[in-house]
Image (cartoon, rainbow over all chains, first blue to last red; front, side, top):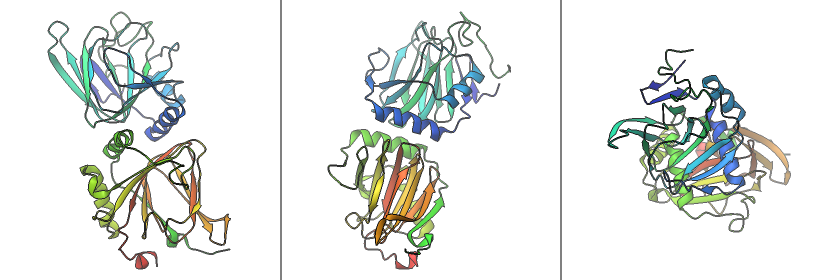
Length: 176
Length: 179
């Protein structure tokens, strides 16, 4: 499978969808209703909107992995560019497939025992990023341009190919 | 009915410039700065929002480089102590009614598509219910608009649209440009 970058804790795929169409879609949804303020421990000031996954994005994501159809996409906006605090992902939804629409972002992988930053990856518009075993490996991040708009869609949590309780693919570059 | 050649009222160009940083900067700025709406400025449609700044107050190098890029290409003053730059956002169902921008600028405007496509229309000055010409453009393109001489308006084609508008220094004579 075509990947932009792959490490033992993350993989980045090319978006292969007209990003302008996705930005228009996201902004229409944002303008149509007020976002909900994030109440999660990993981010205090983000806004989010649930939305039916854009059909082109859904088609592209399904080329990578089956999706968790019980969950819609979340459009995430970090207007103040504040950081993503260190956390591990929950088990309920499957791995997060994050497509950045606006704003570059640096994600850090931390040592589960010491919290030390082990590695980082910078990505931006045009990439879909997923973490391998993000439920076990703490991660954090920071906005590099003071603002971020992203769409998060969830992989299946049955046989999740990004997690070791599923069917973890250790190398996406080497598989079809 | 007027017979006006497109290049006299609107010129469309490809923009050879990466807008990623520009869009990120402006989206942050939009959320941090007060905006004008229909109640402040009648030409704005119901869901539209408008921001403007003196160019000199925008310190972001990506914006300044973008302005310089276009300014050098067309030999137009877009970054002087008299110039302004604006952001214009259209929501679902918004349309821009026919008007002439005598109150905004005494010169011309460069409209840079950031998000969503737009149809800019030229209207007959004697009967503004008649569309005389139109130009469609979207991200990766910009227009130079003779906005102080011709009745123009338009509509977003995707239900949402964000554009940056750079105004030519009002003291600059655009006669040769539009001839």
